[in-house]
Structure formats: structure tokens, C-alpha cells
Image 1: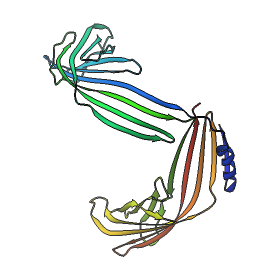
Image 2 (image 1 turned 30 degrees about the vertical axis):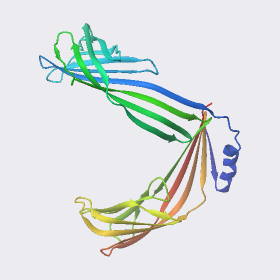
Image 3 (image 1 turned 135 degrees about the vertical axis):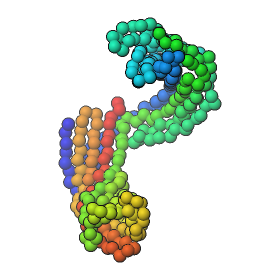
Image 4 (image 1 turned 90 degrees about the vertical axis):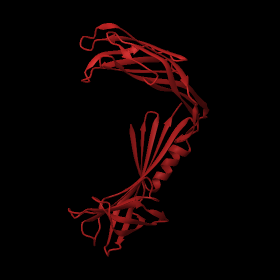
Length: 322
């Protein structure tokens, strides 16, 4: 991994050389994902008080399917178990699993499960999501299963089964994703130090969030006996912002006063940029220092202020997909 540290105006030139003038590879055709996932689970009681648990699943994309089960007695002790069984989905579900004694690992026979399966009315969810510059659109369609003619056979036990023993669904994914040559993801964070407010005893303020244009403010007044707090999003226009929020008792939630917070942000220095390269990826971090000038007033006469160090971080991750 190589790391470069750039400060101020030099950062602009280096970013232009590393990002803007990089020749763009052609984007590929959108990728389509069409996959049907079936899942099923059943719980049976036995005539002697044990509980039988079955899980099964399958998906069309990989062609894989399978099932497993285990049995517990009335004291929740494991009696039987089986893994890597078969599972066939359709109008008739069937599964066969080798049953093993958990204390010895030896086979004691084969557990079988079956049921007639019908699908309820499908529910369609529209998908439109972004992961950086990759956009995924399409549908996810879910149909719940209903069951009849349910049967279960477990070596040495007599399960009691009915149509309410099982639940499950079929989920159909039909999705398309854009296929850029470079995957680009950008994020922002804004955080201040925890700073003591001058003028209000035992009071401190913290700013945080993913944007300096709407930081989340927390004001705490903690005398060690009856702590108070106020919090909320600060609406910033230009470099000034304001928050009005109730000052409440932490223990009871009772409002003791109305609090008004004023905020002014000023640059505390030049931005600095770090570029890290690791194989096919490049991570660009740009940190900009700020002074957060915070004033707090309450309706019961408290007044305080502080100038607090803060920083905005913009991270861009670029990963070649070719």
C-alpha cells in the first residue's frame, strides 16, 4: 500500500492528476440477477414430548438445495440431529436426512419430511437502490407458502404433524445493476470534540453526523445527581445554524426548560488529503478543520458558550472492476 499526504492547494493538483485525467474504461452491459429462493421451516411435537425442528432451502441461481433437522427433549437436551439432507421444492416438498446420535455421531436411520405446498398471492417490492455509482433496479416478489398433507418420520419417534406445523416462502429476485468500470463510493462525516460550555456548570456539547450542513448536537448538563440533556439536528444556512429543543431530565424525560443552541462554523485551516492505493483500490480522504462557535441559552436563565475544534472528512473510494 502506498500513501501520499497533500495539504491545501497542492491537493487539488494531485487529485486532478490522479482522478480527473485517468482514462475512463467503458462501462459494461447491466448485470441481471434472476434467482428464485425457497425456504421452509417446520416444528413438530412427538407423542413422547420431544420437539423436532426442520429447516430447508434452495435457490435456482446456484442450483443448490438442502435440509437439516434436530430433536430436543423436554429438558432441551439434543436427542437426534442431521445435516446435509436433500430438499425438493415444488407442488410437493420432500426431504430426506440421515439421522445421527449426537453422542456417538453414528447413523440411526433416515428422517423424512413431506408436504403439499401452495403459494399465496405474491407481494411485489420495487427496488431502486444505489451503492455509490452502481444502481440496482427491479423487483423482489415474495409468495408465502401454505401447507397440506404434512408428514414427518423420525427414527424412534412419532411426530405429530398438521398444516400449521410449517411455514415458508418463495422469493423471486429480478434485478438489474449498472456495471461501471470503476466503482466509486463517497461518504461524509462531521465531528467535533466534546467541549465544556463556559457559563453553565457541568455542561458540555458535542456535534456529530454525516454533514456539516446538518450536524447533530447533544448538550448535557450533568451535576452527578440529576443529569439533563437536549439534542437534535442543527439547521445550518451558510455557516450559521440554530437548534431549539427541550432540556429534559434523563431519568424521567420531564422537560425542565427550552434550550436554544446557536452555531457558527469557520475554517480553522487548509484541507489536507490522503491518498492510499491498495491493489485495485484507491481511497481518498480529505479532512477540513473547523472552529465550531457554540452558544447555548435556556428559558430558565442559563447561558454558556464555547469554541470547539471540529473536522469534516470526505472519503472517496475508487475500485477498478475490470
